[in-house]
Amino acid sequence: MRDEQARAILKRNDRGGYTIPTSGLYPYQWNWDSAFAAVGFAAFDIDRAWAEIETLFSGQWNNGMVPHILFHVPDDGYFPNHDVWQGTGPIPSSGISQPPVAATMARMVLDKDPEAGRARMAALYPRMVAWHRWFMDWRLDQGAVCVTHPWEAGRDNAPDWDAAMAAITPDGVGDYTRRDTSHVDSSMRPTKYDYDRYIWLVQRGARLGWDEAAMLQDTPFRVADPTMTFILLRATRDLIALGQMLSKDVGDLENWATELEAGAQTLWNTQLGCYDSRDVVGGSWSVSISNASFLCWYAGLDAPDMRTRLAEVLALTKFGVPSLSPDDARFDGKRYWRGPVWGMMNMMIGMGLTEMGLPQGDALKRSTADLIATHGFAEYFDPRDGSPAGGGTFTWTAAVWLAWAS
Ligand code: 9WN
Image 1 (tube, protein in one colour):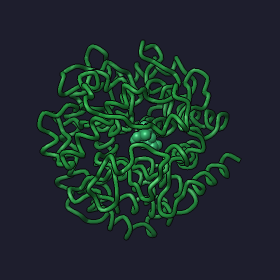
Image 2 (tube, helix red, strand yellow):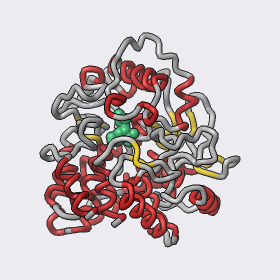
Image 3 (cartoon, protein in one colour):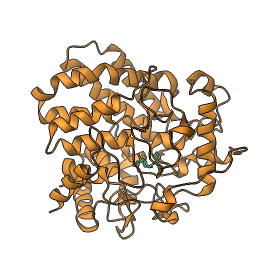
Image 4 (tube, helix red, strand yellow):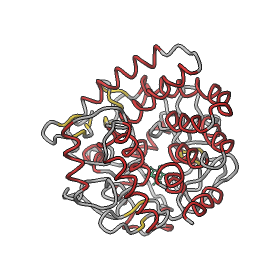
């Protein structure tokens, strides 16, 4: 029954060539949501899976960046819209990116039917390389990948950004009306303090025409982050395999993987015994054991301490890896990226564990399957009792069910 429901959710959220995360709350195409949607579609419609990724890349900017939102059809139900973002690409868009899971998900789609997908993959390949090059050109700090806005990491209100956000005084941000809290209870969403700073950063980027060199000068927000670093490293390894399959020269990609591997080690917080985020501007560690910390295996990196951290965190919840360890004073079980469990994070962590031969991968898959089977296709879940939170009938939760958990 859940299989049927998952397929129905993907179809219901399909807007013709692209999928929205859920109607009402998120009425546009989001970058990493779409890549996950593609592996969901691949369970029953390969052609539609490729179309999802192709539509995402139709919004790619000249500098290689693939935006975090494509505003295909204007919708007043979301804020901030393109009039605030003023993205400069071929399709109205935001001005920042999101974790580059696309190459990894494209490889998974290709594996389902290599013959049918070869030409489509070949057409996407140079676009993916250009996007990865953009990260390497504009987002590195000592080889680790930085975010320039909390929305870029896809983990909007994670404690990882607290210090960098506190350093911002959102002067002149002006009045605005949020839409998210009219769709979802405000206790499950970021606060006004957060939104003032989110919008202030967007206004700064728009004022600078999203010119990366200009934005880098006196940058107010730059945090080196495990989400981006591990995901780009993993996706680069997948691009290397895809490039070899297509008989391409993968020399640049191999150099990038080496650089990112070294960069990942700069995220090791010795005192915490865990991968952590580093505020490049302010210099402090975030000191958080987050679900992004546990993406190390997905990036092909093992560390004995991380296995211990995982065992400690999993002992505190039955539903997979929470976005923040429940014993952290900042933990908030319903508020978004400060505690809840997210299906697609569980999937990436579980894939990584299994690929590295660790049995926790299967256990994580089973707990994610139980979570969705019992509590449905919510955006995220309270790790204390599994109760659904955020938006409902959610695309990536349906995709995770179809591609991995079920
Ligand atoms: C801002 C769509 C997106 C996800 C992010 C998630 C949330 C947006 C928002 O929703 O962010 O990008 O408005 O809250 O944090 O990971 O891609 O599902």
